[in-house]
Image 1: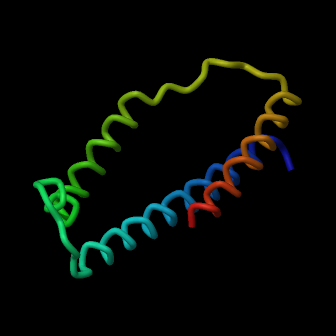
Image 2: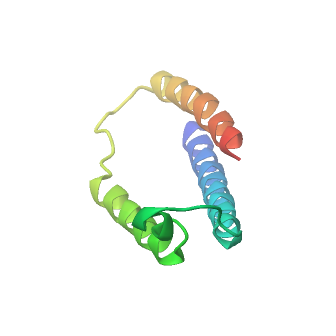
Length: 100
């Protein structure tokens, strides 16, 4: 298996895991917003129960993330690419599974 194929497979697996985690988080927020609330005070408590608030803040986060995304302009040797691929996978995948 060459390094480009491994990077592509890990990129797809990481993306699927990220979208799964995002769906689980949004489902948890949706279920939490449907539960009856206890004692709440102030305007912020009402915002946290509004689906529009979560939609707008998520959309703003995605727009900012996409706009400011800049890949590193690095050309690494295959050994360095492999080391960073392994290190990133060891950090990313357990972290996402911990989130889930």
